[in-house]
Length: 253
Image (cartoon, rainbow, N blue to C red; front, side, top):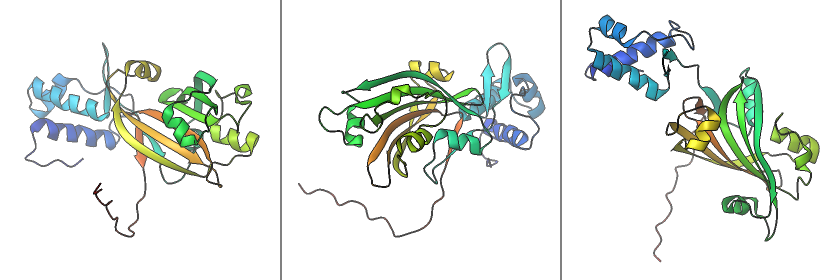
């Protein structure tokens, strides 16, 4: 990351450390030099060196291991927004082995109000709610909660959702092909229960992705709310120029 010469010294040093890491001078999980060594190398005070390292911790470039030191973080896992693809498919495309642990699974006539609206469930209509932790190469990356209409998947409880992809299951078992989705992404912080499942500290940054998936007939087939570890996720999307957006007209009511 380019930093102006006029930037505070700790930011300049943090940028130098990031360049060293990006150039391959340190590999994932290698130990970073001590704050004392960084201070001596760059002619800094210990306080300024500590600020530089803390900035890298906040950015997710490095992580602290109490009693052991500071280490280089592995590259963030990429989640593309170019096309509708499940977690398992996206992990396999990066050479990462996906897996899951089911935390909760139940059929309910009282789903989350947002889920009921998104799935267009009739009054009294039921849905399956599933919560699971998703892993990449054994590392917890996101906490996933999804709802699917019971009418589409009446025997979902018999399926092993600790293995494989929900979308693969929908296609292969139920003949349902999720092909479009509306998603929203917003920043958040990890609450204590979620942080515990993801092996992270409460209060660290997270990203929440809310999604409604539909089949080729525009029928809603899934509503999901996924909580991603902010230090391990990167979202990518390609944009093209088109017609200028027209802002909504203010209401005169």
